[in-house]
Length: 262
Image (cartoon, rainbow, N blue to C red; front, side):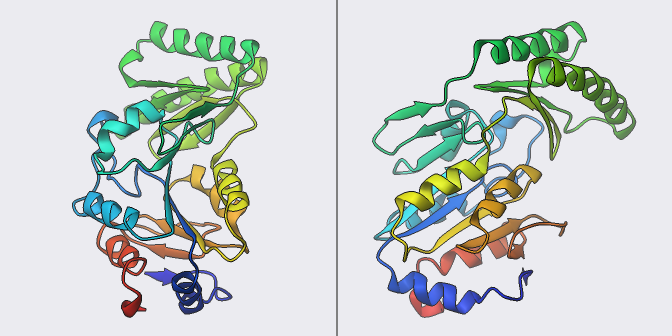
């Protein structure tokens, strides 16, 4: 565990957190709450995480929010929680509330045509089994592929999708384990901004994430909350703190439950 922002007072943060009646804890899923898996459908949480999330959701006044690049419907079977958390999926494009109400940002028809074209090209190139289709994006996964082959695939897919991104006004983004072609205008920072607007100004807000896509959330929270990078190795980041999963992550989350540990 390492504090990256020397101006952030972590003890003061927890003191204010335990004095406030309303707080928010936002967490990315893959790489943060769960280890990466070659098959995304088998990426279950680290041992102890499900129990920890259940306890956190029982903390009075604590709003637990999962913010993921995944399609919400592919994430729900992996969580297996007693209560329904608020979930933001597809990089802020969709939102599912604990009461079951669902919202999704409309996508322009022309942009959708570009995603369909990208998907069809992947099929024709023989990469069908490595594609994840979501509202507003198409992701290509190369996790588990031999490094030499990975570089070849990366060059091929990146070159073609870059042309498609330009033609259909899409964004080509790299993530830990692949590439994603997605609609512009939404990211995880939108989820952070919305939650912050809905909270009392005295609320303490934190975001936990591991990937490059989580940097949008860290930037959105800068100066008004705690950004925590969760990964085995440190990298350049806008986060205020770095910790390793799952032991340091679990230990840190316990502080949200037990004031006496402060």
